[in-house]
Length: 82
Image (cartoon, rainbow, N blue to C red):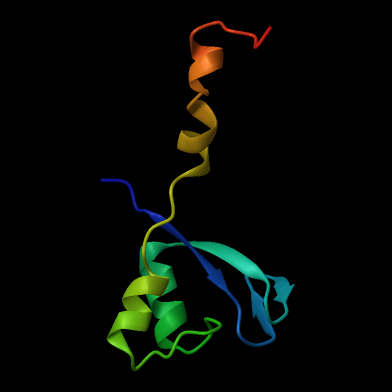
């Protein structure tokens, strides 16, 4: 099974893999790294001691490729709207 990714907003100034991040910046991480990130207190608006907040922060985001690959019904049926 492929590892899902999680988008996390940064709570503090941080250098991550050579990139300077500022509070509010978002990064997309594999689930296992996101869990460590949240537990370390680096996720904005997430109390690492609150299991519900942690679960919500780690909920997987839909993959962008899947969203982009799904064509609207009109286009899929060849309708142009005219």
